[in-house]
Length: 540
Image 1 (tube, helix red, strand yellow):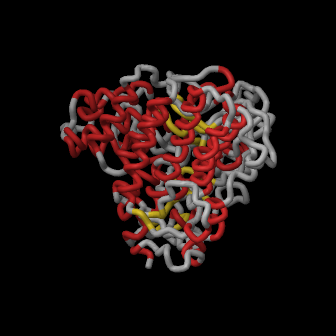
Image 2 (image 1 turned 135 degrees about the vertical axis):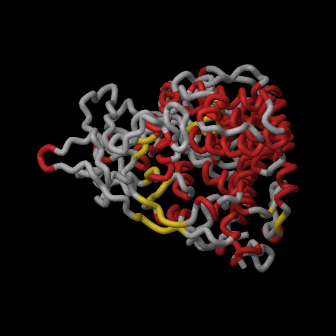
Image 3 (image 1 turned 180 degrees about the vertical axis):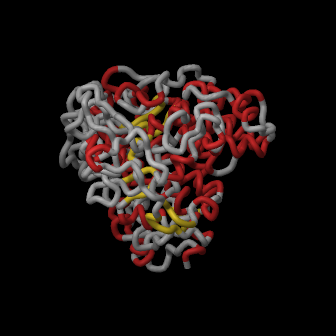
């Protein structure tokens, strides 16, 4: 372990900084900040324990989780480290993104000190312990998912000489993760109100459990865990797919757990990362790939969309799965804001801000609409980052149950809920129009496709690529711009403007080694470990 990790584990909670304040319909975030709180003066009241547990949520997925799209075939970015993971040129010098034992140090500090709080309500204490277990379970899950076997810290270490630990098998750590989630789910409430909105619920712990099992290919367990979330009967799909990822969907029936933002304290950075420069005052740091755009079906369910009799090469983005235009800005689109109804057309061929190859322009000719706050053009967004949602739970159930028992009616019903919300044909209608027979294999392919479309822009595609071991198929070869060689009729050619753009290579990717399915242990951690911590075998 590196020296930073030793400090994190050995030093008790010396400084607890809360990033949250103000009331602004943001529940959990409506807390006052604590600065420079030491163990000598802390743990004096229930409020201290609540604030400490609140601080733990900063280790959960936030807006920058979207960068994982740039590591997959869904995205292309100018963020250098993200791009290197996307084109498989990463190495141990840049692999520390998720390597952190600070959450574990904080968690065990909480467990060691919460009993010191005088007169604390037993029910509140039990709930806070469960919240901290939820966060710690997530952190170990994300680390083992990416790095595999890692050191396992399961207590507050006070001896600096004991801070260098060998790796523990991923499977053993995963068993502990599941145990923590079971314990958390038993003690967490089903919902919150008021200033507690945004804290972990029973459903959040159960949804994470389903994801853990799925990512570890434990399909019967994953199906059962996802079904348990469904059987709570407290979640349902938000009626409007696009609006769910706006402020409209914050703490809605589909929002199982999300990281919240406030206008006055902490706004998200999704506009900068994802937004069109001209239409959204964004910076186009991460763009959708043309290949992702091509993967959306026609609105009638034809796949590929070019099979649809209504297909026109000069109008390729029309008559498509509605989620395309709700997720991605395509050349010729109009994207009006409620408060700015006269925003110009998205035009990456002519517009100085978004022009392909420009300083802040799109690399691919596409930009993201999903997750970018539509309500405020000037500021960054205040919409939540939806880390766990019911739509994913339905897809997790469908995949796991199909793997465990084949294409049952329950599997198809779960997918149909997603399709119907999207205003797309059902599974049966789609298979019929494409002359596909339902089997475990064909449904597997369809579920994987549906996951890509439904979850686009949410950072999860990269993890699907890793666990399905499809990197050699989808992360190899050239990444292209939009192919507008036939011309886009929605873009006027008046005043010398163009509506054509040739298909052009942006970069070439190389996923040609199995080592890319696991991240290398950061070299800095290995160098500081006195030989105890070793590199992942594939990266030696």
